[in-house]
Length: 168
Image 1 (cartoon, rainbow, N blue to C red):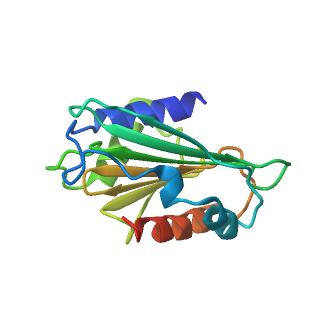
Image 2: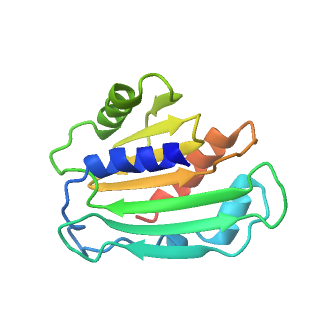
């Protein structure tokens, strides 16, 4: 849990604090990632989504969060999808590299971070947290499945990210 908070703090530090250029609001995370799509991509049965939104102030990042929890023990028992609009400065050249660099400077080599290509404007897989972070425009999209034991989780979340981001 502490690592999730830390990763969130690093994302906050990357914040350009500008609203989404078109609407100022993110799409609803649960609308972008419906239960049936998540279940199909991960090959698991999930419970109903819990949705939250934060950040009404247009000078701060706007966040939409969707969480699915499995009713029974499975290789993936939880999936959280978070959208942070306005979390990447418009002038950011390589947000994935910046994210990795900041995490390593702050926490050393404790994280299993890997830069991924061909996903948004940059993406990072964190094998320690079981988290995929994708930067696209001034937004950050995060899929997290803490405690997952599925051996192909990274591939499954990358596939899910591609499906989800095709709607953005």
